[in-house]
Length: 424
Image 1 (cartoon, helix red, strand yellow):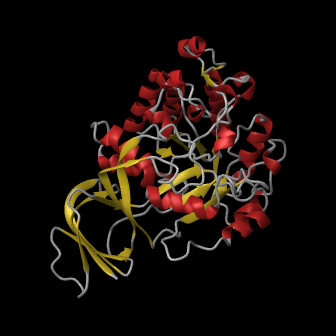
Image 2 (cartoon, helix red, strand yellow; image 1 turned 135 degrees about the vertical axis):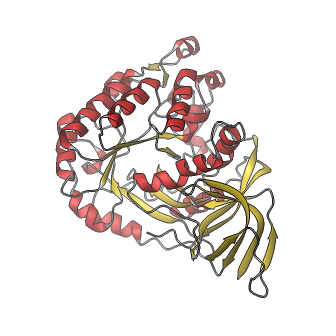
Image 3 (cartoon, helix red, strand yellow; image 1 turned 90 degrees about the vertical axis):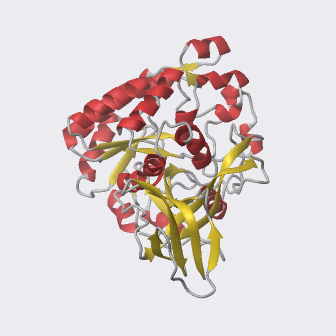
């Protein structure tokens, strides 16, 4: 099968280009990109693609699967279908399953998951757990997980034992895989469900102070300085954290950082609704925090945007705000909403947004990023930024629908995905 996309908007985040061109794809291989392509195989499907966007496949740095253990929330198949609907060709899954991915046998079993039948199939990578049972008390066999193919090591939960953290970073120098950590002092969180502010007080919601993130981050950065071990900082959410990360990068510390996509778009002004789908961890911040994150994205302090998807069933999530488990889905929504709020508004260029969702996540994982330099297997997406659709249970591919955008009409839909080059 061959397809010719006529005058599509081609976004190349590596070359930092954004132009109209013809794109020829033959049997899943990206054969050519040119101002005009007149030589193509007989029977080629011609797609008039003006107004559509063609770019490399997207990569999620960290998110969750319900399988194994919570298949009513999400299976690996439904997760992949959700990824396809959102333009993601690679997923990196946290070990927060039942049982957790804390040994090589479980990891090997998950890696044998068959691809989607009769469909493009996003590539799955898995974080190996840092601690046994994700309990934060005993280091896992990192070498065993490395041998089984872990992309890196993360619990997906705050690690409170600084002595253990320091030993893990020391030991990981012999394994040489990325460690992803969420800076959060759970004692300072103390049951807080909203970022501590005038707003949280007015709404009567227990506050989680910014100090819960920044004190843990400062300690983490000192451990990185002492060991020299590369670390990815997950879930950056408050303004002061941006200052600490800038200082660390200026000192030459080997750190990268990401923020969840929700925290770029939302702040605590939205909490008046008490929508349990806005109960996130870390909590969405103040407007000052959100503007600081945007500034950090623009100047490179924040390397990547993560989806950090957390599926929950309707029954699990539909509780009072303070009682609801934290988390939301986002694979199918992130690109349309980020495009609309950041690119259409002029806050970011299209190529910059693509770097945050594709090129830089790959580099944070120490993997080669997707590219659109022919000839090579096509790992790319075709995106219609102006196509309207309504976020409903029957329009989502996920088994869960816990999102604050449920029932809303949004602009932007992925039309086509090619996963040919997704496997590293």
